[in-house]
Image 1 (tube, one colour):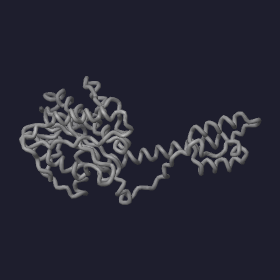
Image 2 (tube, rainbow, N blue to C red):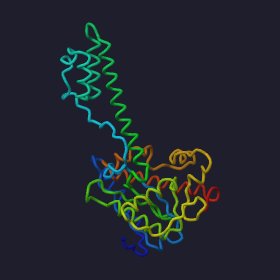
Image 3 (cartoon, rainbow, N blue to C red):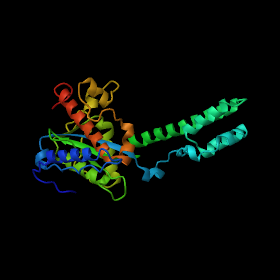
Image 4 (cartoon, rainbow, N blue to C red):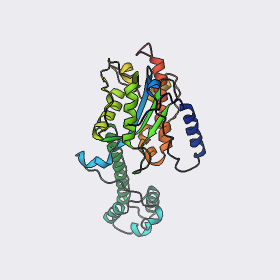
Amino acid sequence: MVALAEDSFGLEAEEVEATEVSASAATTKKRPAPVAPVYPSPSQLKGRVVYFDIETVPDEERMGLFGLEPLPPVREDTPVDACPDVDGLLGQSIDNIRQRLETAWPCDEWLTSLETAESLAAKPRAGVFQAIKGFKEKKISVAEAANERRKILSVTPEYCKVVALGFAVGDLPVQSMVVGNEPGEGSSESDLLMLFWQIAKDAKRLCGFNVLNFDLPVLFVRSAILDVAASKLIDLKPWGGDVVDLMAARFSKSKAMKLKDLARLMGIKVPAGDVEGSKVFELWRDDPAALSDYVKSDVEVTRQLHRKYAGYFCGG
């Protein structure tokens, strides 16, 4: 467990530093890792609500344990200059063209060239266009299957891992911890889980959006898998006093809205703009600082929504 610094109120300075780092690195292809969070002390946490949110990706290291049907591999498109000669390919039979498309896995730009060349032929063959259409549909289906599998793996506690935690103690600035995407680089998932349990131990209550059905079960399962000890038993009953789930409070019997959609309808600014949760994996892999901004945005929206709901759907 990481020791907590008593009465360490350096959060504002850390926020400024994070903003400066983000601004100076905006022109680079890959921004630097986010600034490490300042651990709140027990006295900071006492009597305060903690707003939090997590982001997850598939736990690829444990894929062999899941028992899921294998998917066709997602292949990189072959660039134009490495694709077969268009005229040479069109001189072959329909079956050969179909097989060549499968083995070459050409990019869409080259496929357009193939279609154009065939349409300009003296006697265009319908079979060529059908082969191209069938191949395009296969490329789409492979990508969609991979995306759907990634979504399932990312939202199932036993299949995913936590790569980002955002939190805010009462009115203090929002902070985050993002897990390194390379072995031995940056914070680990265990570090993140230990941070969560230290915060949960002394918080007045935890507040989030859909945390009873997702965030907390994920944190519990991942803690159990990684042998990270819990600091307290958190009551997950909707009427309990440990957790305020704003989604459950507002949509207890009706279909829930998405957090960002709800925020806009309630007049709450969304700092992350139009960035969607489907981009979390790419952000974690390519731009950890942007992932930090994204999870912090959700925490700030949650805090503002709690202030709107307090006294109506939930307590303060």
